[in-house]
Amino acid sequence: MTFVNHCKPSQPFLTKLQERYAKANKKERGHILNEFVATTGYHRKHAIALLRGKRHYRDRSKPIKRLRARYYTSEDKRWVLWLAELFDFILYSRVHQILLHLDNRIASG
Image (cartoon, rainbow, N blue to C red; front, side, top):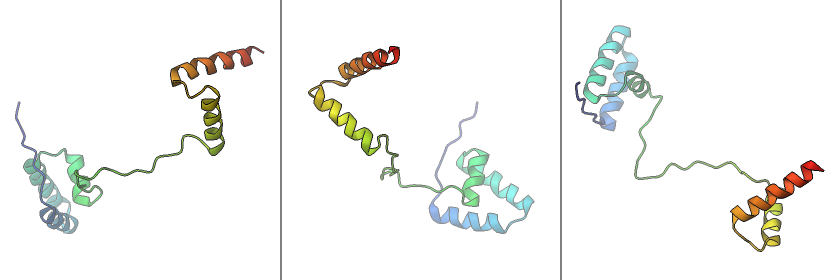
């Protein structure tokens, strides 16, 4: 079993390599890709995506900020707050059991 040292190439080096990769013909791209994979230890598909500019490095010191989808609509939120107030803001596990019981009673008619 061989150990491959994974090293992240510097951004200026990667930019120059991307330019060379874009201008190269298919055979030269294969050579560039082989050298890049041997140097970095990246998987070939990941290396291709990096060299084509499809993937980018991110600053790991900064968190990824994604907008979260709303789980509740405004009406749902109103009902949940009403129920929480009705049950005097007791724990979720207790409210969940009560709601399941109510749901079963409503379903059974």
